[in-house]
Image (tube, rainbow, N blue to C red; front, side):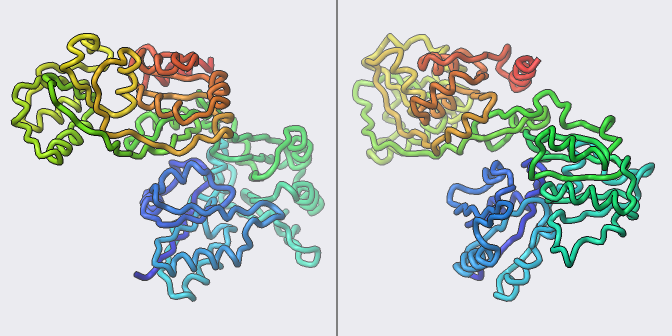
Length: 475
């Protein structure tokens, strides 16, 4: 198979600013080479089998030289892999995408580019600054702040006379030179200027001043790279258009479990939060013996366990018809549906595990079947019960740095809470006690209480109620 390479513009940082096509290509990728400035939350789109390679380059220090990056992506593609080169902003806006593309074509590989939202436009928008405005600027000019040698400087005289908005990318280290040269070439010292750091992310910070004062303002505010520098009357519109920094959860980092539907993720993003999804849980089958001798009641705790149960019966050479004397009990709507698909009507169905009150009765003749975290909850209540746990979940370790930068944790279920805590060291659990944890119900709260970790419970078991509780905590 002929290899293919896709250059993807990751945009300024906000994960949902990625294009639909870019998301699809990340999901399909066999290998992703990514830069330092990308938001690493974007890597959650990649599959578990995808190889992730950090080739990040820091100012004045290239972690991997540009030529070597090109060699690496080409070599990987020649293995027949689908390779993504994930670059901050847009690949063709000071991103060296053109150089990489030419090398790829020269090596007879399939090549495509997926544009990204350049920070020169998207980053300014999130700071409340339109790059053009009918009343203030009918043109804009994007300039690299990586100034050339003394013998090949920017044409300051032309830039000083240029109408419209000026945007300097990667220019913080040269801020004093930029402002001094522009004023020396007669650009008005009263020209409005803004600097936007880490645009579209929780760390976003914006300061404003004039061409004459912005250096002092930036130094006082400790503005550093990566930052945008924008000059022009459009800066004055920030007072009216600053939508992002005024959102109720702006600047807050919320950790949530990975989900396919992303319902809570979208609620939080829209409220201005930065969201970190925990690694996706992967299923691990447990090689345990299933014995139904003396059993006259089966309590299914989750829908997947119904499927595993039937599979195990067949392996054992048994038939579902041999269980005509057995009562089926289900916990949860989806578990009930899974049993009904077998042509069996459950004798009883309970919405929550906590609703089932017969844990201490008929111990010898009842078998509880379910995923490991549910089984462990039951064992804490009664160690004598009979159980069969066909599978459990595994997840990647949660890094201490991720825990430290989080402001809130939202764990919507006891299963999510169990596997999150099960993956933490004792030191991390102590650190977690200093964080705010939001849960929906008492059963999930009990999982944390068992570790002496306090939680905040929402008024209702809904996403809106959780969001309301988070916002209340910020008031």
